[in-house]
Length: 134
Image (spheres, one colour):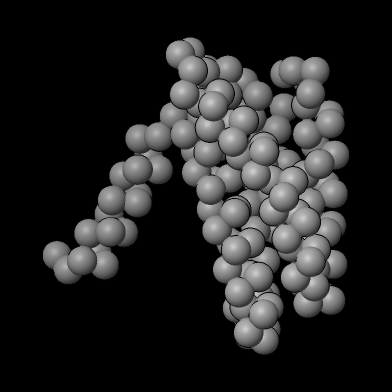
C-alpha cells in the first residue's frame, strides 16, 4: 500500500471510531483549516481555490447547523444563529472575494472550537455532545 492509500485508510478509520465529541472537534478543526486556506487563496488571487475552500467551509457549517439539537441545551438557539450568520458571511465573502470577512468569521469560530475541544476532553462528554449535536 502506498503512502496516500495508508493515509486515506487512517482517515477513514479515525472517522469511523471517533466519538461524537471527537467528530465535532474534527469538523471545527477542518473548518478553520478551510478558512486559513481560503485567505491564502484570496491573497494570491486563486479564485478556484477560494471557491473550493469556502464551499467546503459552508458545507461544514451546514452540517453543524443540521445536526444541532437546539432543544438540548439553553445555548442551542444562539449557536444556531451564529451558524446562520457564519454561513451567510462566508457566502458573501466567496462572492465578493473578501478576505476580511473570512478572517472575521475565523475569529468567531476559534473560541467555539476551543470550547468544544475543552468539553470533549471532559469525562462523560461523549454522550453530552451526542445529545447536543444529534
